[in-house]
Length: 464
Image (cartoon, rainbow, N blue to C red):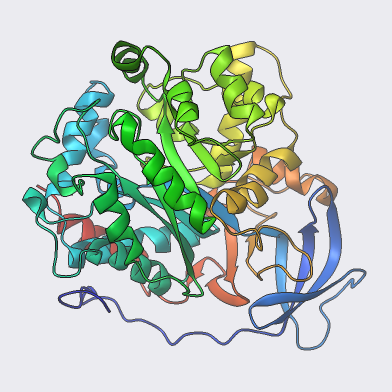
């Protein structure tokens, strides 16, 4: 482990790693556009070797998964340490900017060891919610005051190790965060985030170890206010040369748009376009306050957009133009961002229901389209083009949703996708499988004996 000390909580007894079965029988399987009963999935070397239909009962030797099985959920936008804010930032009122001050306080207290412990518990919570892959938007690079650790990537390596020990995949979106706002130097909190220049960021990011089976490396621009305009292309080029995903917070706040206009005479989306940062490997996160021209820039370049409805409503950010963006050509993905809740089914449901509230009309996305955003397109946004489907050759990452809980019992099985999106929650996740291995079995994490205790202890360790 690339940490200074082992941070495993003393109450955690880690069970033996379960062996991966060679086949699973899916009582009901979502195959992209429809629900198919009685599907057998054969697994070899962590991938789906074959998908066989027409089995009314489990074949001999197959592990039965009762309920609706879908591809593993992809959480395309996460800040793992924000999980420590849950509850605390719900006291009183305030704004995004006052919330940010509380967040900085938690960030100031994290070390590689405490971040590993917290992230491992958070990623285990994600596994319990059916998430098999997370995009970690990672900008907490250095020690307080900005001093690099002896391993300059100690914090990023802690996150990668935490994902492995929680049993899920990760795309570490190593983030350039250089300024407190349009060229202003970082404040005292942000010194931990900054490498000084984009070139020095690239040198550090180059040292991240690639090639691990559960982890991939991508890049991120924190925002146009946090990376000077003349250095945006350095980060974009780094990602392009490696064919890696590039993510960026975009127009989350109207204050960002106003400051960008004052500094550069254009919108943040236009500034990114002018510096070559848009395109099919780029994902704009939030994209809440866009002009029609901005929507055209993103859609026409097939830039993806990650919506995070539970965070956007928690912070009173607003409702982004998701339907218009997708209609113009932007693929949509979903993220839990600040982890006010960790529930990708709720994110999918909220995207549709928020649009209904805004337009006072129903039916902007089908259940199948919302599941695609939470699975296939989320994986693509994170650089996992070989995941997010139940078909031969894909990674054997699966999530099973109970159809017999108090929330899901009653509807016909052929309506299981609609039931999952519009009624189920993370509490209904029965099984989570990553690379053919059961990480969650019957609602219990197979690698961490007590996830709630791990969360409580790791959050207490960084609480002010």
